Image (cartoon, rainbow, N blue to C red; front, side):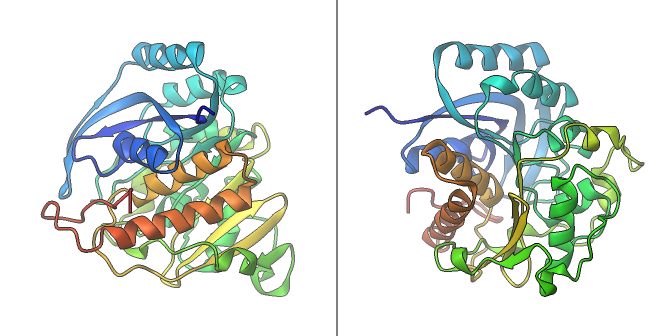
Amino acid sequence: MSPPVVLTIAGSDSGGGAGIQADLKTFAALGAYGTSVITAITAQNTLGVTAIHPVPIDIVAAQLDAVLADFEVAAVKVGMIGDRAVAELIRERGDRLANLVVDPVLVATSGARLGAAASVAPLLAYGKSILTPNRAEAAALSGRPVETPEDMVAAAMQLAAGRNEGGQRDRAGLHDGDGVRDGGGLRDRGGARDERDLRDSGGARDERDLRDGGGARDERDLRAGGGARAVVVTGSELAVDVLWHDGETALLRGEPVDTRNNHGSGCTFSAALAVRLAFGDSVPEAVSAAKKYVTSALRGGRDWRLGAGPGPLNHFA
């Protein structure tokens, strides 16, 4: 039997730890056949990003059309896109892109800015998208601080509803059962991602830097289409992620992995999620499996000494 085909639409990482390179390694490790559309070429290593060259939109479109013309794509992972035109292209081809996982990459682990919220806006309220922002990205996209599990729940529901203003539901719902359940069913199967990678690597980076020029975004981008199919907000000191899906919000608990080698863990999570969806998992099952895979990859590479900064995961552990 042939493996499912999974497509990554993302930037290239010359250091091999994140982006297209991490995605293709994840696809291979989990048994999928990987295809790719490169949106940008970055010069980076474990210490940071030194240059970014966006790929012209006509070449991005040509890559995408070449893949779709010859392969039956079972799932798609979208990472760094940089240019709003790329997001609009993806949405235009949406009917041919099954199981669309959107990792709204705005800042690298090193702290380098890789995109603005306006660039991914066409995909945020797209009903086929499964969004996987970390806390810093969720804050930039929702326009509100995202620090605690309660904040993560509020941001997930806000993004799921396609809103850019404060949510209407009481944030105390995390405790009172108002549409929010504890993710205990996923807890034992899911692992934990290294929380240091899920923070805004520079610490106190102003979320306005990740928005469109620091100003307000056009809320029509978030309202059109009524919101995403599902939202996973990742990362907290308590090793808690939040999943919104099918009208419910689940807390996904785990234990953090003690390692500095976390470069590309966000890319790896969203890529693994796409693979599991390609194999037919439900969204909660796919999220749980992706968390478990990232935990294994973090543990497998924690003793590696590759580069002078935060190193890559061991995708084949």
